[in-house]
Length: 129
Image (tube, rainbow, N blue to C red; front, top):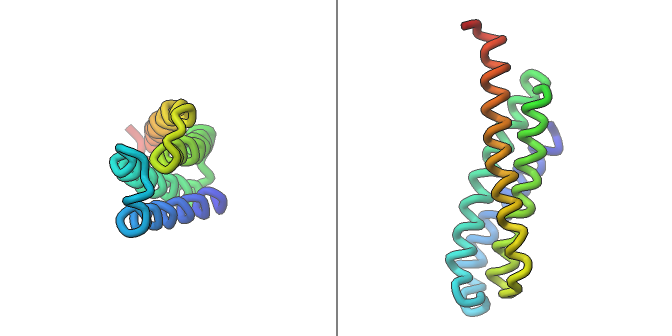
């Protein structure tokens, strides 16, 4: 739980920092199309930092179980791979790094499905039918 909360906080901070750098320091340093990539990376990073914070809060509340742990791990992996690949591509233009973005996107989607599974199994057990 502490790791996920800390990782969520770091990613929220980095998302805001990337937005500020993109708006003020980097416009002339980005590759063609880099501003759009940067905006997408920032948005996904912030949303999923908040999602990981939710997972951490749920874990602190009740321990979690396999689905909540899977969701946290998948969100964490996706937060490294998806925005990381887009940031690298926006700044360097190195196309091979873009191959990591789909893996990150799949991790993020799987994280949401794992969170759904947690909600469906955990919520039912706690509140009844």
